[in-house]
Picture 1 (cartoon, rainbow, N blue to C red):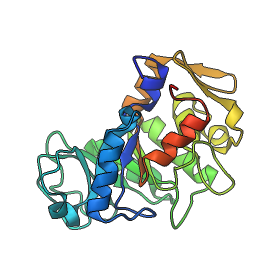
Picture 2: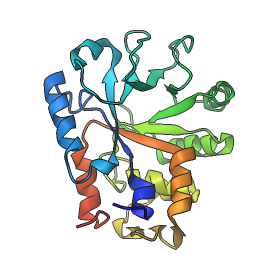
Picture 3: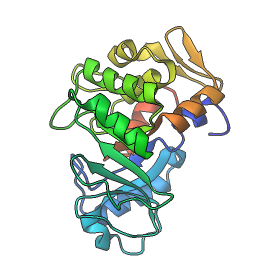
Picture 4: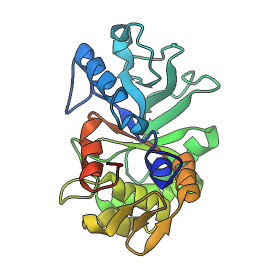
Amino acid sequence: MSGDARTALLAGLIDHAPTFPPASLAPDAALTEDRRARESAERALLARLVWPASRLGELGDEKRELSLVLDDGPVSDPRVAAVELRRPQSLDGIAGPTTEVYVELPLDGRLADELEALAARGLRAKVRCGGAAVPSVDELAKFLRACRERRLPFKATAGLHHAVRTEREHGFLNLLAAVVFGDEQAALAEQDPGAFALTTEAFAWRDRRAGPDELARARRERLRAIGSCSFFEPVEELRALGMLPA
């Protein structure tokens, strides 16, 4: 991919989380799979390696930018570019001056206040789109609108292996369309793969189109990445839709 709409929309989209469910690979196998992703033709889509803090010692001297899931307290490591945690974990003492902090919030009645608090502290949000509980279209749309209104960057994780929404799972193209075009409810509910198109010139959802500059801004200011235990499943979905170079 070169400097086009595909690059603007997809570059660094996938935070690779191979040790997490459902893949749940052992560290050696996870690193092997991550190296395979780094060596693939689609490596431009790859962002950080998501790794649990409690297993940092098993990473060895792997030279990889990390997004560290804090399951065992704060950790200092020069490879850590981002940390991820859930409320009600403490937010104190976890961020260096250049570390991104993503806080996973429950999609409940406290969401607006919690997002306000994150925005006030310069932190970022994280939303879980699948796994043990799958949020409804309405719940996820409310989260996206609330982040948009507060200009709050976020990442999404869990259950985003499919490009387009199915009956039971959200699609990452739906998420991207909701972020780029607004109309979050309709974009997240879309189930027709033919409603989406991506070329070198633009990303399109039905009658709406956005070019490289608008797409780059949406990725920079809003959706920073999606976490996925598989790198190749989302890539193959994009390839099947003809959205990656042959």
